[in-house]
Image 1 (cartoon, rainbow, N blue to C red):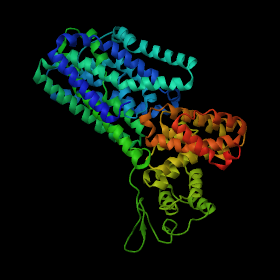
Image 2: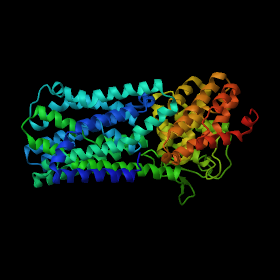
Image 3: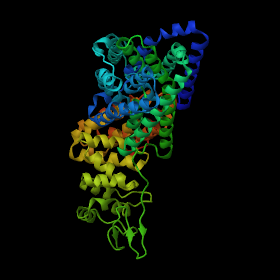
Image 4: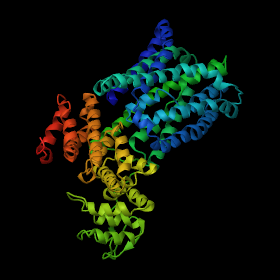
Amino acid sequence: MPRPFAATVLFLAAILVGGATGTWWPGIADRLGGAVDHLVMLLVAVLFFTLPWGGLLDRRRVPRIALLAVAMNFLFIPVVAFALTSVLIPDDALRVGLLIYCMAPCTDWFLGFTRMAGGDTAAGSALIPVQLVLQLALYPVWLGVFAGHRVVNTVSAAGPALIIWFVIPAVLAITLRGALRLVAPPSTRGRVIDAADGAVPFVLAALIVCLFASNVGTILSDPSAFGRVLLVVFVFFVVVYVVGESIARGFGLSHPEHALLTMTTSARNAPLMLAITAIALPDHPAIAAAIVIGMVVEFPHLTALTHLLATQRQRGHARGDGHRPAGAVPRPTAEADHRGRERVRSGAVLPRHSLIGEYRRPMRSAESATVDLRAMEPALWPAYLSARSGLPGPRANLSLLTVAARLADGHAIEAMMSDGGEYPAMCAAAALGLRAGSAECEDRARALATDERWRVREGVAIGLQLLGDDAPDVLVGIVQRWADDPELYLQRIAAVAICEPRLLRTAPAAAVAVDVCRRCTRHLVALPPALRTSPAARNLRQALGYCWSIAVAADPEPGLAAFRDLPTDDRDVEWIVTQNLRKKRLAALM
């Protein structure tokens, strides 16, 4: 996959090449137009072939982002589109075309942009059938309510296009992926999937060239209408982007969720809407032209968003190897008023000798902390925890973190999360990890597992280990899912969480730890060379540099067999093996 800047240049070049071809070589443009259907089919097939199916089957983490995306696409966006077109587009045909364009979320190529922006393509793939069915069912409703048109049998009329453009390539891709799993070893499967994944931006670029080449004549036939429609689409995308950013911050979405929400609310389903409209509203070329003109802004907009989101993620990794949830706020500080009392974030004022006022006193015992927290309002927890965190300093107070994680209820977790301080967020992450047997808590723990602050990520791992003390079978299910997640930080936490000696006192538990290490190592090896140096990949490699020794030492015979089978011809695997052999627990067994 090209870097964000390279992808940006690639897509902009495709737009220019397509426009120039359609303007100066119409004969070639006609032939390129005939390739659009085939390229859409190829794009859908490649995307479904490369989907992380382990994440797709983990449906418990989809509902929140799915509900937000559906609400944005089918409740908020239609209202915005109707308001903008009613005010700014006097021509009925252009207004109807723009409404059709704006109201239908994309069901194919948005996944390509989502992938390049670091978004959650597994949840995105789960959105496709939902959004596809909704937009087809609502198409005649939209035309009737917003445009005064009456259209019947829309779904049945569009059936052949749906089967050709979506169902057939998706089924073929899934079948091919299953066949590959049966006949090819993991290393070969990884290389094939990586090659297909790397082809996504180039297939997108080819599709852009063909779309612009075949429709540039329609776009330039009415320059004034062209300008008005461009203005409306531009304003539409700005409004949708601003609202999407606010929602991402308000709900504290992780980067993969944030990127998915941004892309699914920005990408529109122009090709499918063109096909349906040609059947439902024949002899209305201006409507089709408006749909095509929308893409003039859409592709540069998607390109810019891809670059922006991917760059934000890289900067977040560079600052702290992760991604802060969108709603995080800076860490608060205590202020002394003129009477020598400290004001905390909640607005409460307490004397300096109070529990919260002891910012420089030694850490209290876990027993005392238990008594204190049980007697304290949740709103006061963050300041209390920050006062005894041991930070700034080399080590955080892990005993206090354990107490807070076990005692926290929903109100305390919300108070620690909204505070914004590193240590309260770390405690909240541990509390959510401990409760990850709940779908909602696992969902939130996933988001914190990619936080830009390494201590917050570590809090998730500690919480999962506490969960393993209480419910080892639940922990096993979680780490097995996370070990195959496309997000490398989740893979790292899966390995760290299970590779804890106190959790590996039985042969089955040790076998799970070895399997998780093996799978995470395989995913690391399958990464393209350019991604091996990313902070997330190096973070995973560092964890595997000691996790293997813990897993092997827990049950040496099968563990050593798996460890010796590692492909040491790979540079990163060689480093992992060398680091583990330096650990006394493993060196004694060799």
